[in-house]
Image (spheres, rainbow, N blue to C red):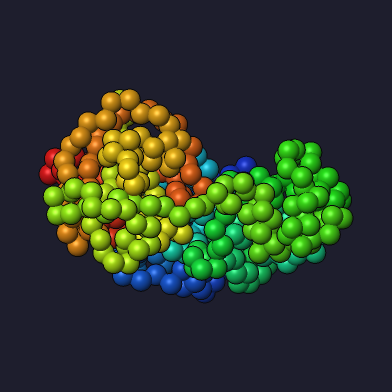
Length: 442
Ligand code: SAM
């Protein structure tokens, strides 16, 4: 949009740009095109624009992406956006991006997020949409320059902080370019910058307990001038931090800003007692009638495609919603796919039901009551040579997820999951694809 078009539209709508909504409208059309190009829109993409305003970026998205969701807080603009971009592929949501429930975005396509963000809420918006559960393929944001520099900072600089490290663990941040205030109407008081975020490949993210990692990083930076050890002793008392720093190869006088991402991860692993407990699992091996013939280590059972046993537990709440778990990116099988609330192997000497209760406890941290057996799937190649007992149970949550095993999970409307499964079966584990219709009906 040109400056004239922006001013005319604002006059037509009888509105003054709102400072409290962070309204600075972009009128450099080449720049708008360039920003949208950074999203690398491809067939199959569903693009979400945060804060479309009068449509400076939107006009380059609509008709290019397969479908578009616009999330705008200003009620003065909504009808205009709905009329200007009226199309079956465009949905305009009148709402606050900070508290927006992102679940409906799943199942619509490969997700990409864009926005010339309102600066007063950029940080919580980034936190909401750069979420491994949502897993957008790319995010492109215009931010206040200072924030962009913090996201992209190097260790031992003043900009390097908890946000740099926590976001950087899962997302590769690229500082693309600086923008002068003069490309916006009205001009903001600060410079801006464009950043792109892309998910880091799984090999670039060493496994650790993400919640513990974030706690340690936030605590470590809580008083920047203090030594890391003193901060950790205050915010996370208990472990012998002197010894843990030593085990991580760090001097005990080190400060938080001196640790790079890999070192923070090593420290979080050293501080995680459960890492040391990871032992070798033994599975019962069974014959074609599901009778036990012996027991062998997990890796051997999988490598030799031997028949063994597994369970899935589908959880429903009183509202009839189903809870889906997103498997962690580090799982050896079906990483980052959506699955039943709990899925797991039956250990040697264990019954199906005992395995189901144990897996629910270990993976999502709750005890369940009645377990209703729904069906048993056979042990062919399509089930990974597993006999699979599928259970149904009820629970209201909340859940506590096993670190490194589970990214997290959300409750979903059953009809939504049906549509999502039909549109994007590859988002789900092969077993879930088979079991879901058996549990909820085709
Ligand atoms: N995309 C437009 C452009 O480039 O010209 C507008 C960008 S302006 C910097 C930010 C936009 O975000 C405004 O339209 C504002 O009304 C909207 N906005 C402010 N707070 C919001 C929030 N919490 N959720 C969604 N939109 C918000």
